[in-house]
Image (cartoon, rainbow, N blue to C red):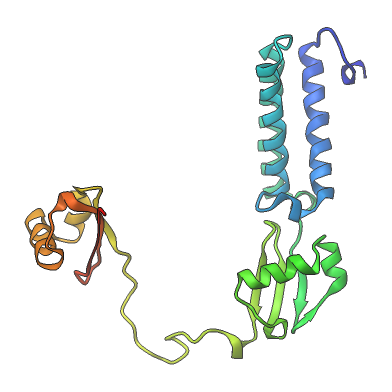
Length: 234
């Protein structure tokens, strides 16, 4: 166990053992911290990111440390990470250890305080998440779950859901995402061709609608219905 302590030199095996112990130690610490501390990072991603960052930083700031140990350690951690990712896919029990299961924190308009404590979040944080989702009344919430990525999924009671065309049985046109046809005064001919338009058409359209030339356009989009929206340099 000498590899755990300060040494004049370390063998390759010592570096490998140090890397393995550091990896699983930080994985455990990250698990204990709770998902709120990790924000949108999964526990496994958080651990590998933090460890590798520290490993690479030390030899760059300490002239007494060589790069060999850091390279070996980083490669070991990379292999460990890939193995852990594979195991989480194949074995549910390990996936449950690495990733938190979703925790129900609101059900039928009632806050489940024990589950809130389990998720390691406060009432203030819960209210913040509700505000971010534009929920003004907890009683409107049918179900809210604390997800493994640190976010809250909120489902409102049907009577409080926003009205959509489908709920009113209205027919609407298919979705069409506008294409960027001009960017910083330059025409994107590939996008223009997909819309069956040419340079002459867009130049004419800009003249008629905006009384300007292509070179004066910062950004412009065009949809399948020939709706042109242009933003000029100002």
